[in-house]
Image (cartoon, rainbow, N blue to C red; front, top):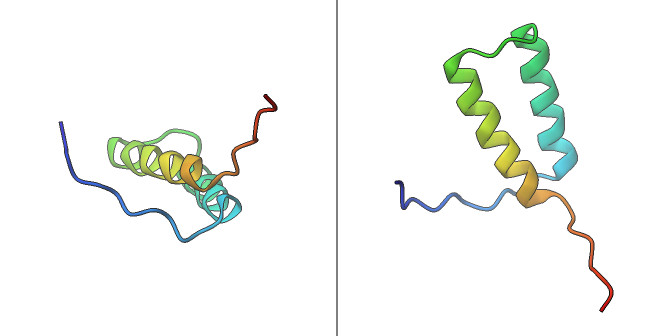
Length: 57
């Protein structure tokens, strides 16, 4: 298990989402092992950058 801390993204969720879409487009819908790793990294970055709704108490 890695203990390396990934830096917080300076990009917006929309920017990361655009890169995810481009990755899928380039791959033709089927990701290689390396592309899957990139996709997973991008999804984690997107989740960090995406706004989180505040729940009412």
